[in-house]
Image (tube, rainbow, N blue to C red; front, side):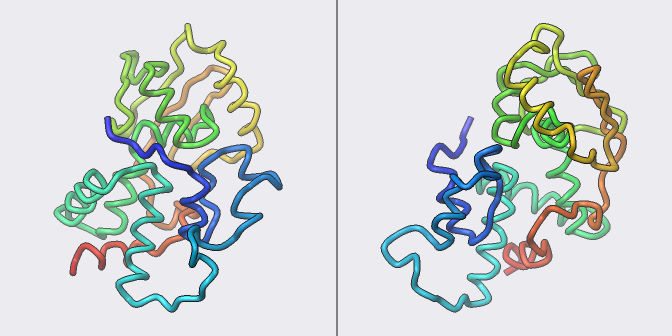
Length: 209
């Protein structure tokens, strides 16, 4: 399974915004972006005017990094979104939001998507009563996601639930955190995903060149 293994704070600095990839640390004064809010490298503090291509590239990289997806898989999602009828932007966001690792994070069972990916990969979650250990598994409306009974005492899951107890649940999900389960009610609408700091149209344009 291919995954990014480099320094996470470097990604936030590269994109010029906090992507909240390290969970709790991102909310403290230890956050690297708070200390050095400029691009990494020798010329990171130099001011550069981005071309149209550069704007599209940075938007694409930001979305990939938020959802923890590498280039080849993300490109397949974009191609699939383009082939479906309707708004390509909404098709793309629905594919990304239906990933099991993303839903585990949205439900509050992990502090961030990276942690959710690891928990799913280690087999701590059931979908409709069956163990699924594929983070990119695409859920369908009505699918029930729950923490395996033997995994409910894991400190990492308890800590995530405590960390996320004040966080609002996405309107396309239904969550019973005390019961360690939730339901993927429906695919989200584009305007409902309010925490994505990127115009997806710019991303689509990058792949439409």
